[in-house]
Image (cartoon, rainbow over all chains, first blue to last red; front, side):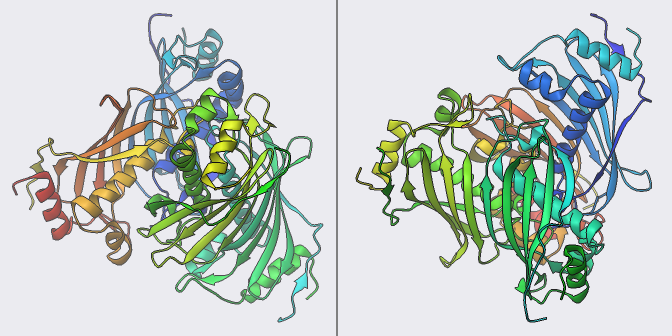
Length: 149
Length: 149
Length: 149
Length: 149
């Protein structure tokens, strides 16, 4: 488990979403922090539906957090209210205590509007300190990302 | 058109939604302003899907706003992260320049968690002043709410 | 303690605030749920600075919540990005387990833009059930609102 | 104007802020997108108070936007509800059409909790395309950052 594993990036978890009035700013386009709110929802859906771990169960019952420790984002094109976008997630790297995700928001023609590389760590919500990725979560991520461990 | 019409309240427009991590506060339950964000999204969906008017088209191309002038809300039970809720909308009253909606958020057993009566007015976004409800919007609402005009 | 007491409404707790880009919607005005976020911040400041109870201490250490059970709001005039507004709070009624507040957002000329009557209850955050207002909180509110108990 | 200028990073624009209940998530700590909302407010204050340009004037009257095209953020320590934090901004680079800012959120002991490098571009809000930084904005930034042009 000590060796880090590079994930196959080709498997993407996808969800459609509509850009809401409440996502947009006085310039009529998505207020950029709102992309992070949307993509946080995508991570929840991935833990629920692709990993079958249950985000609420993880956070509330098991008291395990998934805070972000680093992110890099590029904003390539604007999104407007009413746009149908596709949010995409893939695993880039599975470390001992960290998970590196690649996330994207794509427009109706498939063009990338916003791209995010995000490093999450697993923490104890009692102490807010990093802990090893729990074995069931690790196995589920590896299975989903088709990582051979 | 001057006479106000009382709507049949029994026709509800419904949407399911999952309570997100980002909807919740440090008490682990929905932060109450977030209910209004959710229900604002429901009004958008209603204008798009039930009325077939296009919310974005209304606001951006036609420069017609639907600001809230009054609301009354009762919060009967809490919602937690991960809950599947049903959001419901019905038309209570269709005035000359105002629309009174009844909105609800119901939990998994159908129990009402939060209820809202909301009065919207149609405004010109150039002046932020009230204007008559445009005839196509009025007709669509009357049709959806089965109001005889 | 069983008799409810009507508060003197003339004592207002005030805070200035600037309307932010992030408070506003594609119509260029405050997105209405954002008024509730602002006024929730005012309640925090009131508990911290006027009541000297400590909002964080109340919620986190004492595990006492102040959820909203009912509200009525009137929106009288729009607020734009960059506006300096005054937020005002007064106590309307102090019940056994509930506190009724009157809250306002006023513009630069003192004109009321938005008004809110909000009923909060004190709850145990362990059970989310209503509990009696703790004596120190009750005494502090009564002192601030000059309510004779 | 074609040559880019490297800014002296030592001049910081500072603002204090309290972490709000509404900034925090069910883990009781700042929900990370909320840092971007806070720091967007800091950029507004900087344009208003340090540059003396007027953020609202820039966006609404002059129809010039300041969207983010790239950011890199590191989250080093958590912030809790009620914390007093200091938000800091300095100019790292002033390009022809872009401004690179370094932003920080520091805790009560001055320790950095979150750090952000953010590249903004000036755009026309009519077309959402990049435009040259207007001369008065450029001069104000250079003056504030003590950049010799």
